[in-house]
Length: 242
Image 1 (cartoon, rainbow, N blue to C red):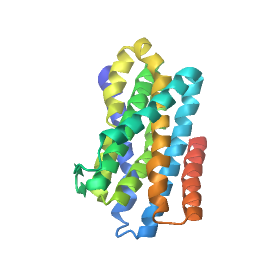
Image 2 (image 1 turned 45 degrees about the horizontal axis):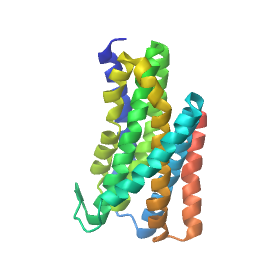
Image 3 (image 1 turned 90 degrees about the horizontal axis):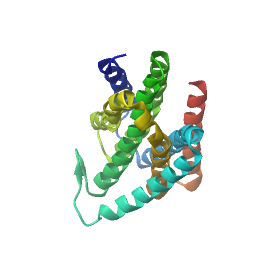
């Protein structure tokens, strides 16, 4: 396949992420309880996605994946220190603390897409059929990830259009990284386990440092735990069926 075809297919995986925001064009005026449940569900979806990333990474390099997880956790800690509470942050219609949370969240989800973009490019290096199957799997997998992003952003006060835009934006590295990874497969392949681990470590840490505490401010612990587990189980069952 030529690089334009690889880019176009990877771009479709990116656009699929925006489908996760579609339900929020029909659901508006969320109550405080629903927002809390949404944050917990988003957390469960992210932990489930992290499980898949770790699983893939361990098959490539066990220690590379472990190192990536540690780096991802450290990155979130440093990011929290970088974004000071006393500064006024803006992201679309979001302001203040909500904007700060959304910025950190989107940085993590965007960096997570770098590893998936490399995965698409490397898979095409192994043959057209493998590349198409991998791209299709990532595209379908991106829909619940887009749902997780949208659940989080809507909970912070974003509109459905903003949730869709930022969901697609977060997966933009997929087409951008697929082409160079396809051209230079052997160069990019060693970075995959570290990239998968990094994304998983960052997402898991973000869930338990931000989403869980925020959810507990709005709903009871039992409801939060059930919601988080439902999100986790949905992502695992979704991956099994896929």
